[in-house]
Amino acid sequence: KWQRVVSLRLDLAFPVTDLRFSPIALAQSHQLAVAAGDVHVYNIKIPVSAFVDDDNGTPENVPTDATEYSATKVAVLGDERHAWRIKYNVTGTVLTASSGDGTIRVWKAMFVNQWALLAEMSSEDYMEERGELLKMKGVLSETGRGDGEMYLRKTYY
Image (cartoon, rainbow, N blue to C red; front, side, top):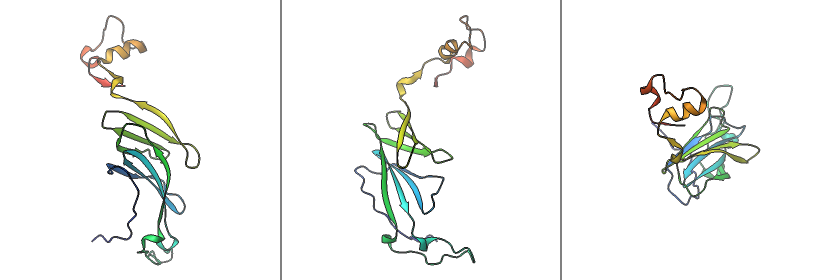
């Protein structure tokens, strides 16, 4: 059976549509990204009493008071498009967000609490025929020789 240990209240203007913990935990905190309109990035400080005792593998003193935890907002990533889903990369340094209008944005953690927008792709970047891209890259000749069925699939690039 699950037992609630602590609840954190975050001041968000929009409903939460997704949340993700960074796969890499810091020394005494965890990073949490929350999609609620914009993408809000928090550092959640964990009290020392929540750590497991190495000698016998049991918690020293399981905290039950929310005041022992603290959530600090370290970044707000967004623009006029509301984030719908978010995902960290495996190292926790890149955060990707998708919006309901088909826009995908990619941010990179640069320095302490600094994030840079690496890329943005909208649904207008959609190409009708894959052959157009392959011709631009020189993979498909102008005559279109090759497996035509394969090159005419609709694909996002």
